[in-house]
Each structure stands twice: as structure tokens, then as C-alpha cells.
Image (cartoon, rainbow over all chains, first blue to last red; front, side, top):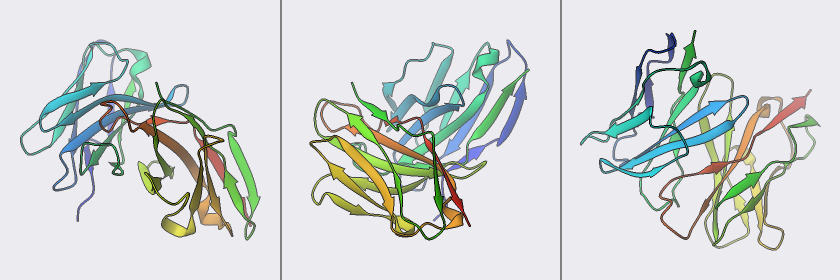
Length: 114
Length: 116
């Protein structure tokens, strides 16, 4: 069974640009969550989508948004990029939506802002 | 609110010796607890979870963890460390009450260094 796939693996952008990251969950998984990982702040929850609906959102500005498609694939978008957005963005998928199943992570997209 | 603390930034252990990586948590209701491991330039890999039942949970690669409700702890253990266990370890919690979905709160991570 294929794991969680994130594309692209690496991305370099400049301040003010926008970016879209993609995540394909494990087949059959309906929940997709996004996390930001930085050396200073650690792992922080961005948002979760379940059956195309956003269920929870972390404490991030409105520049961070996402969506989920009917095939459970998900995208996240960051607009008006800032230097502080440089991070590893991780996507995780889970079979259920009750929080008692493990999340399976992709290898992430490393975003660098110049 | 839910929170996790990993009090040690780094744990050093000799190969063949037992290892412990500490984790304490805080939730309003009952916790769902998870341990993940991260190797360089990779995502997080699931090791084990505690949802309910036996306090001692066994997971992948010989790891186990003990849930202690009175001490609100969920320490990760392994009887005999391998050099290949050297990695970054994360503890995570989700409050079983409320509608947090799959939102996990992670600890700051503990770097495990196993020396030959």
C-alpha cells in the first residue's frame, strides 16, 4: 500500500509570492491533517480536513488555507509569503476521524523563503 | 486545552543499554497518546499508541511505553538500544473529549543518540 505522498519535496520562493502544496493520502483514508515544523516552534497543527470539510484549524493567520477534494487529496496554500513561513510542511492521513487511529505522515515539503 | 512536555532535549545511551525517553501530558478528559520517530529529511513514523486498556503498550522495533494516569506520563522505553535507534522522538496527545478530530499536540521532541 502506497504511503502518504507530498509534492513537491523542496520549494524555494520569495517574499510576497504564494505557494500551493499537495498531499495524496493513503488509499481509503478520509482525514488529512497539515502540520508546520520549524526549529523554533516545533510541530504545530495547521488544519484538518475530513470528507472535504475543514474540521479544525490551528492558530495560524488567514494566509494559510487548504482544501480537500472528493478523492481525499488535499492542498494547502500560503499567500503573501513571509520569511517566517520557511519550514517543513507535513501532511498526515488517518483512516477515521475520532482521533484514536494513528496518523501516517508524508516526508514533507521543505519550503524556503528568500 | 491539551499539552505535552518532553523534558529532555537529548538523551545519550550506549548501545545495548536500556533507554527511556520521557513524556508528560495535560488534557481535560482522557488522553489518546502517541509516539513518533523522525529520521533526517523524513516525515514522522508511528511507533505506538495508547487509547485505553493495558497501561503497557508495545509497538514497532521493540519499543514500548507505559501509561501512568496518576503521573500523567507516557514514557517510551526499549530494553536494548541500537545505533540505528538514533533519531528524533516525538510524543503527541489528543484529548478524547470534545471534537478535536485528529488534531494532535506534539511535544518539543527528544533527540536520542545511541553510541557504539
